[in-house]
Image (cartoon, rainbow, N blue to C red; front, top):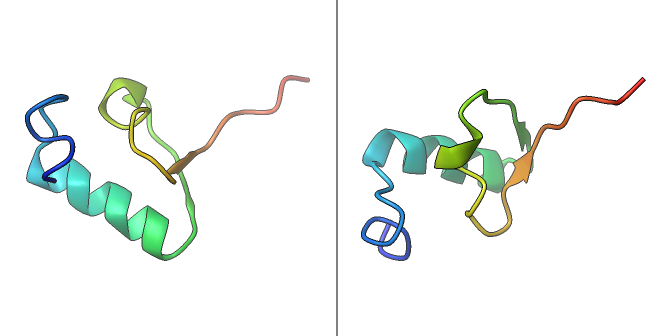
Length: 50
């Protein structure tokens, strides 16, 4: 929260979602990439290009 709340306008719900994904080593699936792409150590789900 401290690192991104001012610079990227990170709010509490998004911070909780991202931190949960990081702690449990999960890929985060979201259609709202702009809220999460700047967070270190967060793996975002990317569809396979077939």
